[in-house]
Image (cartoon, rainbow, N blue to C red; front, side, top):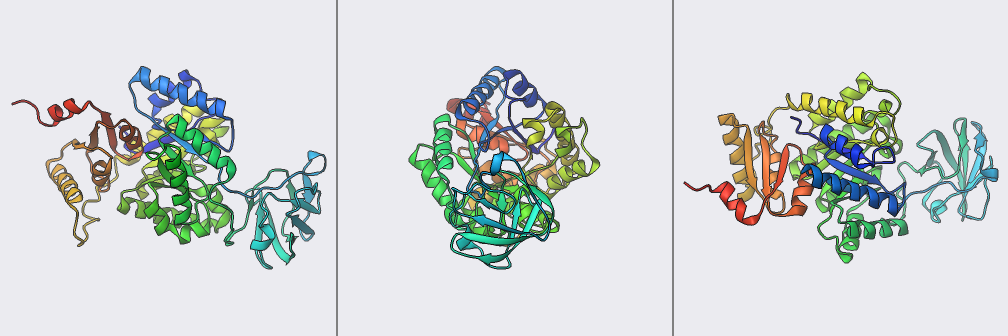
Length: 433
């Protein structure tokens, strides 16, 4: 039985009740809805289907809304065709959105583009496929030298590594999407491009204003500014997503693995959930088996201490979504078997609060008795997460009367949430003699 949880992005190929049932049986724990694509009707139907499957199977799963987030994109090109750029040429970005682009210039969606940049900065387009260096900046234009050949397309992402951009935490689309999430009672919001604590607080206030105060915020760390402010972001968040795609564009690729390990370790100590995401089994979008490197990547994230691993295109649009979940679950189960308890490694000298002291004692006792199960009664999930912090060999059965807590605990490694009636809870914990 695996302890590491699996987050699956659901798309057209996997949205049916039949397919969702198969994914749930294969090991999916959380359904991710990517709001960079699709409309409210599509996402609403996926949520409805997921809840129907849970009702039929009796299994619990979480629902995660992933926001598009504030971003910079290229705008229209002549004829809608890609523009061929050549290394060494001059290329201009403009904030004048009436401009129709070509191989010499293009408009961008961010009005503050020129204000945030200076000579010498790097501009990366289309996930870093085209690199440029800023050579001149005016009021509404940024002139660059193209560093490599490439085809520039419409609506392509633009990254500014090392630049502190002044985009708002919530775009207008995000605000509407979060209101939809509140209405649909999703369990988690994965907030894209979080850069500082105030970004998280702004999102939390927006959720509260629309009845979503119980929705947990998973902050996605996708740039250097987010890494620089990680501690304050972690404190304000309910969890973290290690979003390695954009992060690998924003920081040197060789630094990504070390950023991953740092974030996972800090999440573990803070009792916050952490998801490792992006390109985990990417080759399975087209192939029935992953590469050895991908299998090792998944195992490494689990050994680092991640609560969950995530599938994106593999389950949303790939040829082998069910096979991807099956293989992911197999890797999780095999790696979980060799994960040692961390009860000794987390033995610090600080004073513990009562709940954490009791939970630590329960783990120590379970380890000495070689007990297969630790039973925790929890209302908001903190006690279960306090036990999970030590990675016990035993599974953690979390009994709760709170339906929201039951759905949110499915994301915590090793935790098996069980929703019970209040009068049944005490009978389970204090049986008649």
